[in-house]
Length: 500
Ligand code: AMP
View 1 (cartoon, rainbow, N blue to C red):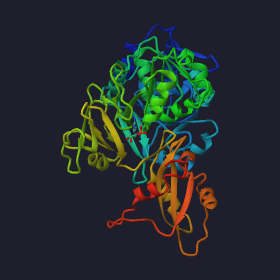
View 2 (spheres, protein in one colour):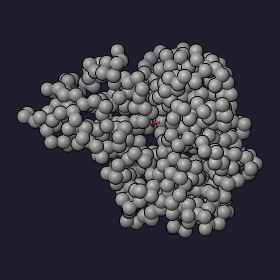
View 3 (cartoon, rainbow, N blue to C red):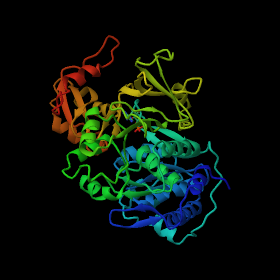
View 4 (cartoon, rainbow, N blue to C red):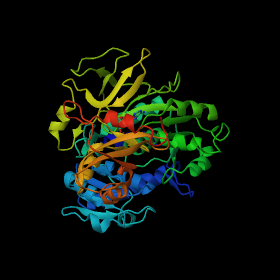
C-alpha cells in the first residue's frame, strides 16, 4: 500500500548495511536494522489496537529507539505526538486530554503517573529499554506499511499558545516530505554526510529537519543524547554537517578546541529556531573559516527560508525563500508591502500545516483566504530578497532554543496568593539568548519575595519556563488601551544579565 512519507524514505535508502545512527558510545543502527525495528514496533502498535489516524503520544528521552517509534508510527498510519520530557504532570494532563491518544509511550519512571483511561501505556527508557522494545523483540520484523496519502496526518506538534492553551499543529505526510526534499537539495545533502545531532527530538528542528533530511539523503547521524560542547568537539572530526540552535554556537565559541583544524572535515553549519546574532556569525567565521547558514522556520510551517549554500550567507538574515515556498510581508490590513518595509511574515506552500488540532476557529483566524499562514513574526525583505526577522508579534521568549510563551507563565504567577498582576518577557542573556523575566505587582500588604515566588512555581512549569529573575513593581506600565507595555519593561531590564 502507498505510504507517502515512508515510501519516500524507502526510495532514498542506501544499502541495508549502511549506517543510519551512531551513538557516542559506538553503537550503530544500520538502515537495514532501522527498517526491521520500525516494522517490529509498527506491529506492536497494531497489536495494541492503533488504527490509522490514531495519536501515539510519546514523552520519552532522546534515543535511537525514539526515532524508531516515530518512523513506526508513520508506517502504521498513526499520528506521532512527541512531548518534551521536561513537561510536568500537570502539563501532560492537558496534552493527553486534548489529543486523546490511543497509546501513550512514557519513560519507565513516568509510566504510572501517565495512566490514561482509553489509552494503552508502554514504556521506553533512555537506554532503549522498556515494555515497548520488549514487545517489539517478539514481533515480526516485516510489516505492511498502511495506506497514507500526502494530505493525511503524520504528526501533531504542540506549540505553546499565546492565550495560555497549547495548540496542536497538524502536520501531514507531504508537509514533512516536501520540506525534507527542499532542505536536502538546498543544503546539498548526500549519502556521504554524517550529521552531528545534539538537538532534542520532540521539536521540529531535531525531529523533522535533522532526521528527515538525513533519511531522504541516505546519510547518517552522530546522535548525542544532549548538547555537550566537549562531546560535540570530540565527534566533530567525523561529522560533515551540524544543525544547531544559536546557543550551541555561542557555547562552542567558548571551547578552546574550536579552530580551522577541528572543523576542517565539516562542510556545513546550520543555525535556526532563534535569532543568531551577526556577531556570533562573524566570530564563528573568524575562528573556523565557515559561514553558518541561518534558516527560518516554525512548528506550523516547517522550514521557510535559508541562506544559500552557494552565494552570500548574510549575517542577521534568514536568507531566501526555499523553492516552492512563498513568503510575503503584509501590513495590518493584509496588504502586501514592498522590500524594506517591516510587516507581518506570511507563508504559503506545501510545507504549511493543515491547521490546529480541534481548533477550527483558531486555524481560520491565522490563515488568509488565499491560503497564506500568518506567522506571527515580523520581518522585512532587503533589496536582494533576503528576509530579516525583526521581532515577534506573538511575544514569544526564546531561551536556550526553547520557546516560552509569557502568558502561560503569567497565568501561574497570577494564581499565587499575594500576586496582583504580572508581566513576563525576555531580556538579553549571554548564554541563553533571552532569559525569562517576570515583573510582579504585589497585592496590598503581601510580603512575597523572589525566592518564595520561584519556589511556588517549581513543579508547576517545566524548568526552562521558570523566570531567571522575578522583580517587583508597584504597578505594571500600561498603554491607553490597557495593554501592558512590555517594550518598556524589556528596555528597563535589558542590562539584567550584563547586556546593554
Ligand atoms: P518553533 O515553532 O518552536 O520552531 O518556533 C518558531 C519561532 O522561532 C518562529 O516563529 C520565530 O519567531 C523563531 N525563529 C525560528 N528561526 C529563527 C531565526 N533563524 N531567526 C529568528 N527567529 C527564528
